[in-house]
Amino acid sequence: MMKGLIFLKSAFLLWVFVLVFVPTATAGKTIKLTIPTAISMAFEASEDLKISENEILRNISKQQEERSYARPTVIGQVVWSNNFEYPDIATTAATREYYVDSGLTLSQTLFTFGRISNAVSAAKKAVDASRFNKESTRQDIVYNTKFCYFNTLLAKKILEISEESYENAKQNKNILEDRSAQGRVSKYDNIKISADISSRLPTVNNARANFISTLETLKVAIGAAAGDNVELVDGFLQEFQEFDREDLALALYKNQPAIKALVEMIKEKEASIKSKKATLFPEISAFATWNHKGDGDDCYIGKDNLDDYGVAGLKVTVPVWVGGMDREKLRQAKLDKEDAELQYAKGREKYLLLLDKAISEYREYLKTLEANEDAVRLAEEAFLYSQELFGSGQVSLTDLNDSELQLTNAKINKEITLFNLNMTVALVERLALKESPHE
Image 1 (cartoon, helix red, strand yellow):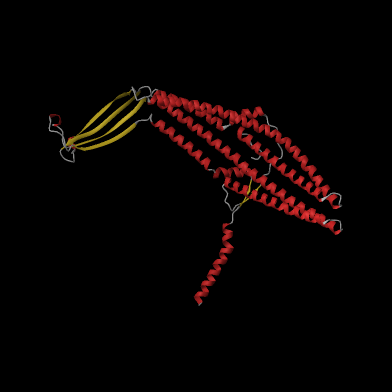
Image 2 (spheres, helix red, strand yellow):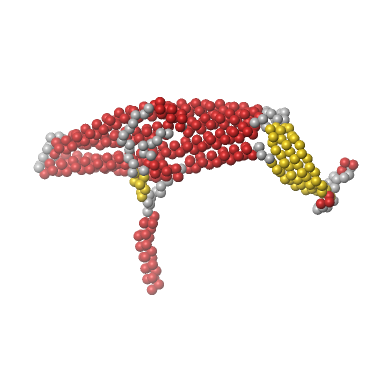
């Protein structure tokens, strides 16, 4: 009986511990997130950035591999053989049953008509291109992180506006109830205003669901835990400067890492062509070998049967005919260079077109923002005046609702324009690598 009571008490205490302490232990932390902080966290969480770093290391290793062909090589070799069957003829009269040959061979390439040096140069250009590609990846992460941040901020603003619209509808109901106390309200108006309040709840719920969804996407982008509470610190930019198209175009060609990577790839293909051409010419190398070898009638060949042999000299290797393989590799290298030049031309056109579109959209969004601000100001005045008139029975409930919805839509449209402007600024910064006001 006592053991049963002790077990029940222990189980109860464990249950209390789980309820009280486990939720606290597993609760996420609060992150006050600015745009620079979000970008730093996104860098840490990005697999693409780690892949681009590995690509640099791979190309550096490839460069070292090409350099190794210009260094001396030393090869050791030991051969032990058993001549268990051979004919009894004059040419094999001196052959014994066991044979051993051990030695070292040293070789050094002397001249390859630029095959090695150009291969090393091509590998170096590939390293430079991969470094620019890594920087381009970083800029993509910056832009994508800003998109996630601003998209979440927009969803938050729309949720706040939707909640404010819901509160406005409840205020309208209070005004109607004040009028009802004076006996001047129809049953239809009471039903309709209750319906208006109810109709706003799905909008609020949808806005909240969208905010939660965009917030989770932002958490994934910055590598935050699902249970972390993220508070957005930075808001939308509210002041905007005029863009100078010529200045940005020059900055694009000067700073854009993706274009720089394409330039380095052309240089890499040029060096590769020179290296492939060199394979059509002779190769001169020096060599030296030292061997300690001999034979005997027993498995163990004693040192008395072993002698030293040494050879040194020059070797010229001439590719007289290798089935056309070298010429086909040269042809492929020329096609690779042509493709790299086409990619460069395509990249320049693509990025310049993106820049021109962004600048045009930016200027139109500025005009839209000015109209949005006027619309919000006038809609606020109209709504407040409508509430006043509705309180005295001078306007209908429909007129009041229309005024409130107009105000809500004007506020949402302004936030959408601010989102578009901020993302356009982020795109221009991505293309021309201009410093961001947020950073």
